[in-house]
Image 1 (spheres, rainbow, N blue to C red):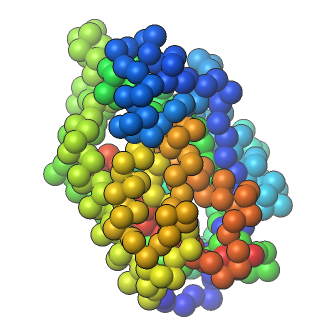
Image 2 (cartoon, one colour):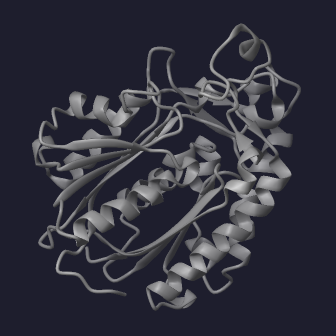
Length: 336
């Protein structure tokens, strides 16, 4: 691992899930599906859905407040806000600017990142680089998604998968505070496969018209089987590359957090890392919240931190995969 005078460290985490729960039993009344079918194929039992007037920036704000409280930082101490989302409040201005306003983080620069489900890890890589370069001291990362706003609830192949939620963390160069050191990050992308998971309408190629609405182009479209194959392979390769960068072995990993998209994907990743005990592979989020895209690994990390299951000297491997295609992995080391 390359040493730096400025050590990037996660010193606070937070997450937020909307109150409303959409269970598999509820979905049985909406589309031709069953609780057994959903659980068997995805491992998902329920997901949280934002209120109609609850937006991505609102959830991001709530998660941010919790991360800042955990880090014991005032919003005015934040230098940069990075929001990872594929469901922004608006195409512009950025959701990050809306979060900055809500927090009163008047000294912070702000921008959005769009790397789909890999957004949290992409944001971590940016925060790591800025801190190691000595440009910023405290960076707020937020991943927030209102996927219910782009899900077609008449399409049983996709509507059972997704939920809403947000996760946040504070990455700091303050070495006096205990936390999770960002040891290594690796990223990847393959735009050749961009149409496997896509929101066709709403951009400059297909701006909103009566026809695009009629053709349901403003709902996400996914080729599930192809996405599955890419997801497992890409996350495995990214994770192994990250281990090499960090000069670690599989046996050095104490917690594995794969993207919480589908239990079968998580189990497939776990089988490829057989030296990591199954009880150390995190899979609780997918059962309770479904796929929350960029937020999923952040929510899982916050859960682990709140359960106090990450001890001093332990290493956490997180990996994610999403539309783009994009993928990535990071290794965090606890000095708590």
